[in-house]
Length: 327
Image (cartoon, rainbow, N blue to C red; front, side):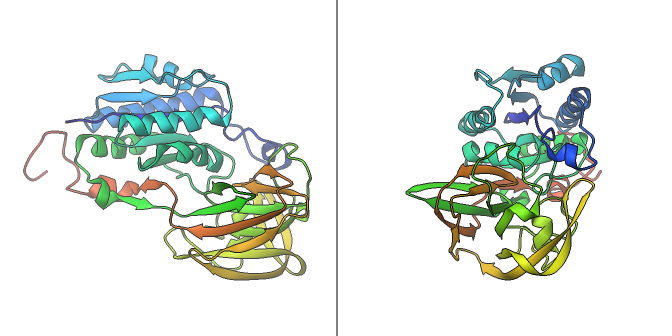
């Protein structure tokens, strides 16, 4: 039996202030529509036949559906859109409850963090359309749709093609939250424009991933030690007087960042961060205002993510839906 596939396209992804301080272009709505349409074409080609989607404020998926002319049943989720991250959180929750085979997301680290808050064990196929696309994958929508279709039709087994990602769990005053890539202590007392790009406002970083080719705060750690998503550790970095590393904090924004100290973190190892009346940024955006002392640890508790290559090769490749024998 073919299962549905979820689609969450964030129209606001990649439109924060980092686009202004760097040299990044803004992905227009028309191109986001084209990406979703390619996802739908890939899904249909793989034998998928049903889509549940978040009817975003810009109408991205609705326009894509109207122009696709494909044999797909596409149904909007019963959500009153407010144009905030809660839309993606609620969409993830409803798609998880509906038992979709996978959720294709269009956005950056923040979009996927929001969907992950609600989707539970439903795997994500993150297509990069954000500012700092560390969690997302730079892959064509057609290929993402093909991978989703193979999961929907049972051609690929979730246990064989899905990987559990890491996350940074933060706790303070009896409350909790998490980031998928980075958590940063900032000197700023207020969230302001939310996005963080000035290393002079950062005192401490906890990183689940740190790759030298990444863009964003995790790029700082990537210059110290490369930590991939499947590596069983994280990094603790203290920013301050000391030798500098050169990191890419936003598209086109290369900055020298002084490092006071750093060390690897074992999975589950808790560290305490002194916010000092400042803010905590999660995945590059200031979220928690003046939380005081905050606990943080990197765990293997992040969302399931579809390994695109594994999904497209598991069980054989190049076969139309329903075909048998050698391709």
